[in-house]
Length: 514
Image (cartoon, rainbow, N blue to C red):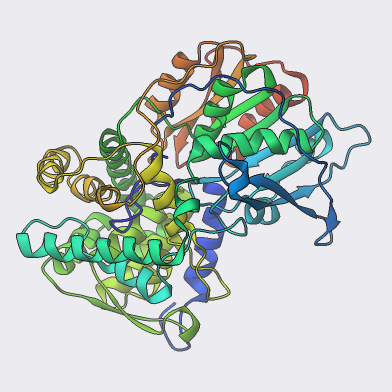
C-alpha cells in the first residue's frame, strides 16, 4: 500500500513492523565471512455473509498448528481458479480464551507466518487469545509473486538511490524496467491483478469465517494497519476489536507519504547522531562523531567510490558496497534504537573500507534470511504497492519532486521520491485511490502511534484516529517504528482493550520500555 523507508529504488515505500528487526541484527553478525571484521481503495458495499469451510489444522511445530485457506484468485470471477493462503496458529495458554486474534506484521510483503513463529508475545495476550497469522496472497507461502533472484536483488540495492544526470536516470529506469519484466515473466498476470490490499481484506473475512468467529479480533502493525482500516470500512459489523499500531494514512498520496517518511528518517538519523556521544561504545567506535562518519562515507560513495563487503558465500561472498547499500542499511537500522549500536559499528568499519556489516544489514532489510535465501518481500511489496494507489508516470515529475524533497530531508528526501518510480512501469493499473478512511458502524478502534516513528510518522496516527471517528489514540513517547512489542505500558492498555473492549482514557501516553 503505502509506505516505506528508503531502501533500493524499488522498495522505498515499505513500512515494516519492528518485530522483524531482530533477524536483521542476527544476520549482521552471522553474514560475515571467516576473517572479516565483525492509499485507500474506494469504499465497497458490505457483501453478504462470508462462507468458508473450517480450517483443517495440523501440528507444524512443537507449539504451532498450521492450515491452508482456499480463496478465489478473483472474487468477481471465482471460476478463474483459487489459491491457498498459509495460516498459522499459536493456541492460547488460557482455559477459556476470548477467541482468535488475527495479526499482520506489515510490509506489504511481510510473512505473517514467520512473524508469529519468531515473535515472543506477552503472557497476558497468550492467555486471552489463540494467536493467528497468515501470509497474504502473493506473499511467502501463499502463491508468492516472483521476480528477480538473489543477484538481481543485490544489484537493485546497489543502484544510485537519487539519480540526477540523464545518464544516471537512464541507468535506474533501465534496471527498473528489467525488474518489472522479470516479475511479469515469473508471475501470472491473473495473480498480479489480484494482490491488492482490497482483495486481501476479503481474504481476511474468509479467514474470520473459517475460524468460526462471528466478529474479527485484529492486531495490525505498520502496513497491517492499512489492512485493518480497509477491513473496518468494508465490514464494520464484522469487527469486535481492532488495534492499529504504526498507522498508515490512506488520505496521503504515494509521493506525499514518501516525503513525510523521509523527513521521519531524517529526524531519526539526527537522533542517532545525538545519541552517539552518550554511548561509550559508539564514542569509542566513532570518536569524531557519528555524523562525521556518515557524512564522510556518503560523500565518498556518492562520488562513485565503494567499500568491499566480505560475506559468507551463501550470503553473496565478496560484494561492492555503494551509496545505495549504505542508505538501505542506515534506513533499516533506524527502525529501532536497539540497532543503533550495530549501525555505529558498521560505520566504524566502513571508514576502514570494510562494508561487511552495512551489506549484511541492507540485504537483510531486503529479505535475506539466516539460511542464505531471500524471501519474496521485495517482489510482493512492489506488486501490492503499485496496484494499491496511483503513482506519477512522467520522469519529469520525479525529478521535480526529488529536488523539493531534498530540501526537506537532505539525506533521504530525493531517494524517497525515486523509490516510487517502479510503479510507473508496472503492468497492472492501480485499483485503489487516495482517500480518507471511514468505518461507519464499527465499534471503537484503538489507534497506537509512536512520537518518533520514522516509517509511519505520528501525525499519521493522529490523522487516522480523526478519520475513523470512533477511535482512541494511544501514544508511545520515543523513537522507532511501532509500539506494542517495545512498551509494557502499551501492552497493558492494548491487552485490556482486546480482552474486555475497555479503551484507555483519551490522551494516554506511555514511555518506551515501561
